[in-house]
Image 1 (cartoon, helix red, strand yellow):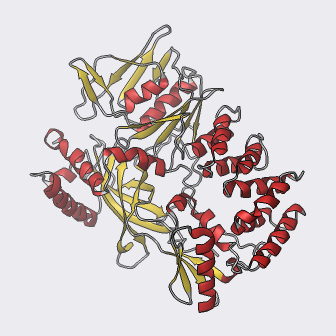
Image 2: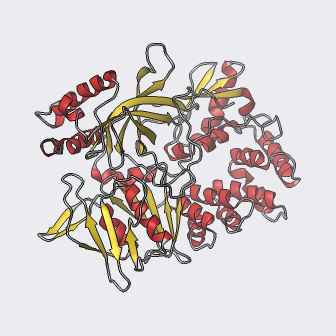
Length: 578
């Protein structure tokens, strides 16, 4: 059966990808939009007390609606498994997939027997779970968790999710899904060889995986300011204040009624929705110059006297705009580290170079109170040249946490220190970082399949072997070896489609070149030479981890920690910003 239908998974996946409006040239930009730490808003926002920072601002007058995360579920098909799939599962899911296969086969292929295809060991019916981020915009991406249905499927590793739509979860008597689809999902299934703390593990559940950044929002969420005491005069005043301070040439706030104001999140703030909303809340309603002068003096005094919440005071100062710059520049001379940081942060957000230098001092302070936060602030200031230079220097730090934070912050802007390669469409993005200091490998487990190599000349130093002695049940497609003194690695590759074992193939010892050699789209160089093997992201991480553990790569291998995994299937979360 595999020989007669092996083209269909590829055609089906292509149809799904085309359906998202993506072409091959778009993938690099798309991966850049899947930030790692994708700075999505939290499920709630602690309400500040009615301090000086909040007095006469929009915050006490409104609640924010539309920022809860939506739990969604769905069903789909994982293809391209090769003997690790299964045909069993709920009949209702099977019937749905049969209809979808037939419908899409009419678009991209002919003569497909849907029932026969689902009976193959190369496919698996799966259940999907995810959280759509609060305030999600159309085409925004998010991770989707995948779980094999039935009992026959043994592994989802190396598979690709297709035919998937996601609906809002609701515990209804007739079923578990309600409303029209809110998102679609597609992409390679990542079955991590690491636990949630980023440690290598032989207790991986091969029947579960994640499609990193595979969810695509189709129904955007409206974000509104809902007035506690509905009045047209207050709604109009808030609308004018927001548009005057933050709107520029576009109106971000539209007063729909006396009860609420609709907010349009600027494109450049999509990844920073929380910051966007905080700025809104601290905007003063009164625009009288005398009032604003008085408020500036009060806020500066509160900051310098170290009373109140300095973060809230900083936000309130930022909401006043450019007039605060001279006073904040004076505050940079303060001996208080809190005052210095928040004064510098506000200046940086207002586009001032002095702010970048001040925040940079905190970013360079190892184990300092504000170090990581300061690095993230420098990353937001992508139009301030000095901020980029501060981050560039931090790539050479001896502090790995600071180095990784600087890399994450720096990659949101084009920078010559980071060269990116998109491998096999959406298999992974490889970032090669030109820096000094100890070599380091950093791998993401959320947001997007992305691997960072700190050191463009990173090498494998034989002896080296992969996989070595293994006690887990993961199927792998590559074996890599090198003896002491060898000038290259030797790769033996198992073709997942026909099971054929390749003759020994020379592979580079340079790690940036090796990752590209293994992960790129296969292409024939000559009758005797092939470049690229489309080896999955998870297996490439497995290889690098094994080489690091045996000192074949003299680089520390750090995997992103993902913490406790929540299950949307338990309940629908409705917590709002308050």
